[in-house]
Amino acid sequence: MTDGEDRDGRAAREQHALAGRTVVLSGGVQGVGGALAVGLGRAGANVVLLTRPARGAVTPDLLRVVDEVDASGGRSMVVAADVRDELAVARAVAEAAARFGGIDVCINNASALSLAGTEAVPVSSFDLMLQVNVRGAFVLTRVCLPYLRSSDNAHILTISPPINMAPRWLGDHPPYTLSKYGMTILALGWAAEFAGVPIASNCLWPERAISTGSAVSILGEDAERWSRRPEVMADAAVSVLSSPAHEMSGQCLLDADVLLGSGLTDLQGYGGENSQTDLFVGG
View 1 (cartoon, rainbow, N blue to C red):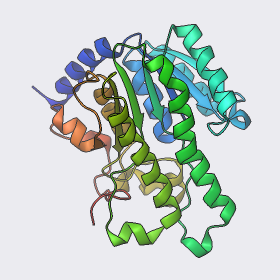
View 2: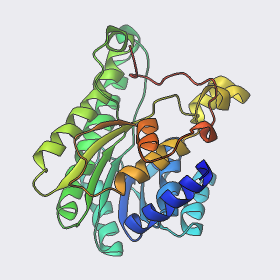
View 3: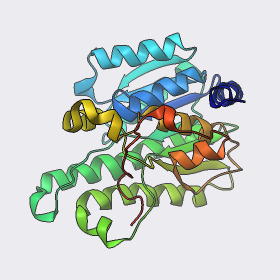
View 4: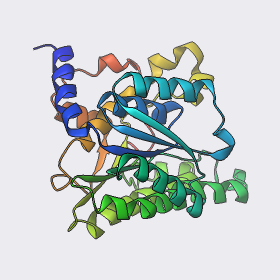
């Protein structure tokens, strides 16, 4: 059986698991978020895209993602809410639950980033990373919890890294590292807190650099040589979210490990033939 056949067979199984499920996704228009939305749509899910109000206007990226979700067999819904605004998030999630009959999955993907060191990061940027990354994940998850409790296969998936205490990662950009590790600690805490429901809570992180818009702006035409396409994260997320909640929780997962563990034997189809390991992976 070829890798293509492996992927087709796995997709068919996972479509059955996610078909009709409702997923709330923050930061779901560009880069990894857009790929997650489209991948979930292809699996038959209802995809609720939580976008910042300032970005709530119709844009080419938003139209593309919505069209791809709807054309692939899923159903899309766009709601404008800043993840830092508890009341706005609560209204958005309630609206989504009313339309689709509940919430089954919460994906914390929205993130603010600055890779500068302590002296170079303004306090305002430090605050923004904590508010979007940590507080935003807390707010969205907390708002989704009453609905997740009613799902028969509830998942929280947080796009955050394994906690790597190597000096390299602690010292390179402490403000950003703190914010992403904070997301991971919350996710692991939720796994323990809600194990009895059960609500699965896991982290997912790219093993190698992903060709997001920022990567393309830096690397130009070489972006795909030095980074994998974001679909690798989408396929891994679909695999994780297709599993029964009681089987896997409290894990910090790398996309490559998930896909290889699901039976895919070759990741070359995702590009990045010369890609480097991503932040927080390895020493």
